[in-house]
Structures are given as C-alpha cells and as structure tokens.
Image: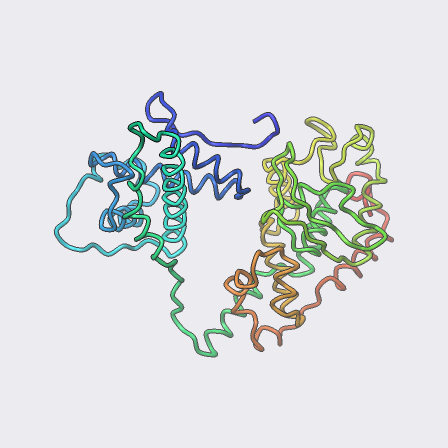
Length: 388
C-alpha cells in the first residue's frame, strides 16, 4: 500500500471475495496485528475451500462440519491447502483430532471473528436493502450462537509436582541467553547500529518490530526512558497492542545511544535527516528504517561471527526471565513487556514464578555493563567497534 503497510485480498478465480476482503479491512481498522490479520484470513479461506468442496457456503456451516474442519487441519497440517476434493468425505464415526491447542485456538478465534463480522455486515446490508431482496439477515445466526459459546483450549500439563516445576525452571534458564553470550554477540557486531540493537533488546525486552520503529524522539536522554509508540511507518514496524509505553533503562544504555549516533557509522544516515534510530547506514536507501528482512540478515551475520545461536525474540525471553529471577512481580513484568494483560504474561512465564527459578544466580545487566566498560578502554579497530 502507499503508506508502506501490507494488506491481503482473497480471490475466487478472477473475482474478489467481497465478504472476506471486507473482513480483512474490518480487522485492519481495529488495528489487529498484521500477522494476526494474515492468519485469520488464511483460516477463513481454508474454511471457505472446505465448505465449497461439499457445495456448501459460510451460511451452511454446522457444529459437526466445523469439528470435521478442525480435524482435517490437525491431520493434514500444511497439506490441508492441497487435499482438494479429499475433504469431501462423510465419516460414520467420530474422529479424534490431534490439532494442537494453539492451532485450535487460532482457527476458533478466526472463525468467531469472521462470523461476528458477517452477522454485523448482513444486518447493515439488510438496512440498506429494505423493501428489496437483500441478503438473508440471520443466515449466520445459528452457527454464530454455537461458536460464541466455545472456549479456547489450554495446553495440557503432563506433571504439576515440584520436580516438574524445577525442571521447567532449569529449561528456561538454559534457553536464556547468558551475559557472556550477549557480550560475544555484541563484540561480533561490525557496526555501532548492530551492537546497540543487541544491547537495547537485552536491556529492555522490547520486540524486534518495536525496536525497528524507534525514532530519535522516543529516546528520552534526560529521563533514561525509551518510549514505545504506535505509528504507521513505511518500513512496516509497529508497536503491538496499539498503546504507548515507557521503558526505564540504565544510564549506560543511553550513553551507548549517544556514542552510536555520534559515530562515523551513523553519519551518512544523519545527513539524510532520518528520524529512525535503526536504519540503513551502508547499503540500500540510506536513512530508511530497517525492514524485517534487514534485521534477519543482521541476525544471520551475528550468529555466523559470534558462534552463538539466537533469535531476536530470545532476547525478550531472556529479559523477562532475568526480571522474574531478580524478584520483579507479575504486574511489573507484564507492564515492561507491553502485554495487554498480566494473564498473558502469566500464561507464558508462570513456570518461572517459583522459588526454584529465583534461587538461580542471575548476573544480568550489571555484568554486561562492567564488560562494556572494559571494552571501552580497549584499542579496537574501526571495522569492529567504532561504537565503543
């Protein structure tokens, strides 16, 4: 789209499927995350193809047909989109679905949202077509009443004893990046931009998309605060949840930021007048905010040079894990991570809120700061550490 956003359109042959396209626009207007919109659209398209294979429409969907649809997704996985006419099978006995709780919930939420929108849309069209033959106003009502009563599934916990909790905590500690590993990744950076990005994610726990969307006005040097602010940006970066939040940071992070923007690395971007903190500085359109492919290219290069396997999201998990280990409560961690509800934080990290995990020694940011201070005093080459 002209403003840099991505949208989706569904076709039936050469014709746009208006009902699904309008559903997508509805989700976008409500500021759903782009990935959520894409996944919801995909599940609705799958459902439409499933219904069409038996000559049915969205208005014909029944609870039994919906259960069959979910069973097929669980059985076929990615092959579901290519099974074609094989979906048109009538079974005489109940089949057991092996679909995971997360996929089941994704399908359920997508279909719920679509049928709620469809019901609202039909009422709106009916008011326009008064006195003429418009769409059947209550066509979606029967299945909508059923699907609204369905509840999301929760993953089953095989064990709930203290031993299992301790093992969960140990696995979380092993998945967490250690300060020495973070330092290796920082030292592998060949630009101040990449080094500062790593330190920022480790110290704040923000999402990579939020970091890509940071502007200089978000870096409050006088307050030692970084603001995560929702915006529509040409590089596609966004703040999930659609609300702004401040993240207090240690002073050394702001000093690194000042060193970075005053470096020779950043000078070409500075001269373009860019507002982006993280932008193209050597290739591409200089000054343009980093895109998703850009940051994954940086990730691969850092893994290759440091020898440390990581994902950008692993820094977020590490930050949350260290905060919990250091004694921060659920509300504090949820607010810092930008979760819409503490329940989200609890669902992800509940196994860490126990004494076994908090007994583990976490050196954390202080350890990294001390090493960065030592590194600042080293004689380094221009190629490796102009930012230090």
